[in-house]
Length: 177
Image 1 (cartoon, rainbow, N blue to C red):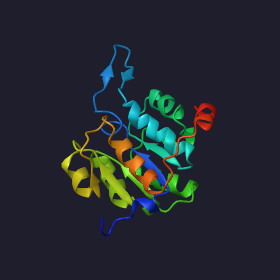
Image 2: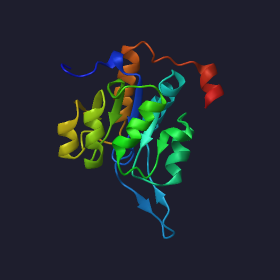
Image 3: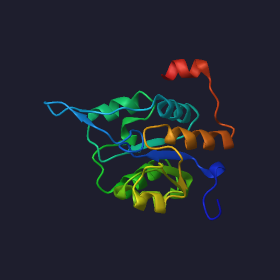
Image 4: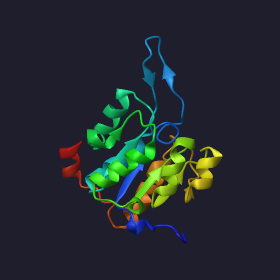
């Protein structure tokens, strides 16, 4: 990991949704409601991060309120869920500023062209195995896992373990979730 922020230096996480937390597939009904499938392992990693003091952000072009509902229940405050993001670096910088983080202290997960600027700016940029070529080339790490198949869990867990912060407290978990 030469030239890259080390896992021990990461203080926050941010990620895109479609193609990262999901496999990119979206079902739509006749009323225009959109449905996504999330991996519970990724959701648990987000809860572990929130429970162990890491700020976490969602930065997505998606606008569905179901995204807000899904990640609010995983411990992400509403102000850290950026829906309809069109210039993701601006939302990334807002998240960093509000939490007193430097860009290089955040791990960002992205899979497509709108994510590239943030992948490059983050301390560690991670792309799923099936990300577009631009995202994979920009990333510091390309997961062996595709989007929606615990690629976020893989590296959130690795960071927390590197810092001795992958700690499950059942009483706190019950209180928070």
